[in-house]
Every structure is written in C-alpha cells, then in structure tokens.
Length: 251
Ligand SMILES: Cc1ncc(COP(=O)(O)O)c(C=O)c1O
Image 1: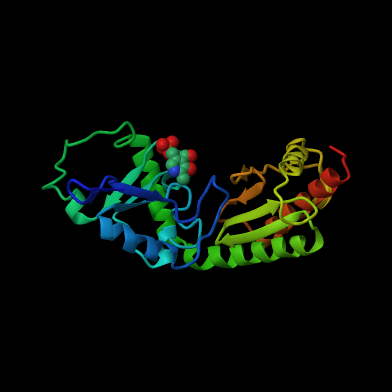
Image 2: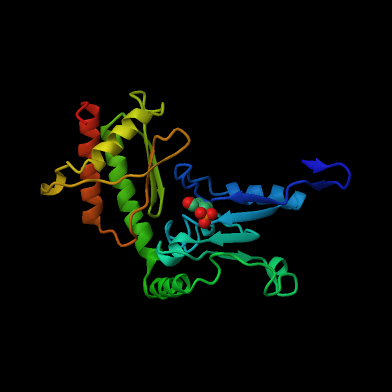
C-alpha cells in the first residue's frame, strides 16, 4: 500500500457508508470510524463518507456519520435531498480541499449540479427539515419499530439478527439454527408480500419489502420518517402473516 519510492500511500481516498445500505443496513461499533480515520490520517488517505441512503435524518441525525464522533474529509449526498425526486446531488469537503482557490467556479461540471427542478425540490426539503423535529421523532419511532422486530425475533427461530439506527432497520432471515442465511425463505416472504394477498388489518393488502446483505437474506427497512406506530404495527402484522405463509409453504 505504501509506495517505497516516495513513502506515500498509493490510495487517495477511502469510501465508507456509516451504515452500509445495500450491504444490509449494518451498524458498525461506535468507535469503528474513529479508529479507521487514525489509520487513514497516518497514510494521508482521505475519508469520503457516502450519505446517499443514510443522510438527512434516516438514522435520526442529519448525517449518519454524526453518530460516530468523527469528521470525514469529504461527504457526498443525494436521494433524500429531494425526498427522492432527484435529480440533484451534493458534495461537502474540508475547506482546503474545495476552497475557491483550489476549486474555482468552472473547475468541474456535473449532469446533476444545477437542475432547476432538483434545486427547487431540495430547497423545499431543507425548509421541511427545519420545520420538523426529526432528531427527536425518528429515534423514538425507530426504537418502537426495533422493539416490535425483537418481539418477532423472540417468536420465530428463522429471524436472526435484528438491529436498527433510527428508521434504518435490518432483519436477517435464517435457517432453523437462527444463523445460517436463508435466501429462499427471504425471497418467498418478499414474493408473498408482492402478491397483494395478505389480510392482516382486515383488508386485502400487499407488502413491499427490500432485500439487501451479502447473502441477500436481510430485509432492509427504511419507512417514511412520518410513519406512525399504528402503521408500524400493521407492517409487522403483514410481515408476520407473510412469514407464516412462507414457512407453511403456501406461496
Ligand atoms: C449508498 C449509495 N451510494 C451511491 C449510490 C449511487 O448513486 P448514483 O446513482 O447517483 O451514482 C447509491 C445508489 O443507489 C447508493 O444507494
């Protein structure tokens, strides 16, 4: 990694997601990025933080890296910035990396840098964020959702690790040992949800789930920040119905 000719690292930057998103909503230990940054600083490697899925209060903080007591060198964000409307994305960097002296106007361009619709939507989202108290409500709702998932886990051996940070939650689906990834069961639950034939809550409904993780056996849950406890209860009831049907082989 260190080039013996100049004693410098051959790598310029190290990219992280504070909570791995498609990777399965993995919440790392509190000191993980602080320790990583020490090593990167030692070799002059920039820490670039991708907040594209976790940014803007998904985890209960404006930026998810705020949970980890470390300041990255560069932060990139998008998606939630326009509440999913797109197209705009953004970049923040330490002053010395992006000051007008080193990065004057016109030094770069981007397809998404000045889109009028994206800019208007992003401004509306910023105003909305200022008028809400997501820093209080998201951790409360997330804690409630996590409790409900832990109750499910206590009932079914096929639910493995469950965790969450704010309203970014994960639920692993496993074999009967409670550990080995069970992709078939995960897919079966998802397909039953998509079939729109569930009945929990007294109406015919569907359930749209997202799957992530290296073994594709993790339900990654990222509901609206406005979700209510009643809606969380309904989601859990629909999930339980889909799980029971999948376990009994009724697709
Ligand atoms: C966490 C994360 N980073 C980066 C990207 C890629 O963004 P783009 O499609 O704008 O390159 C995505 C897209 O899904 C994402 O979820």
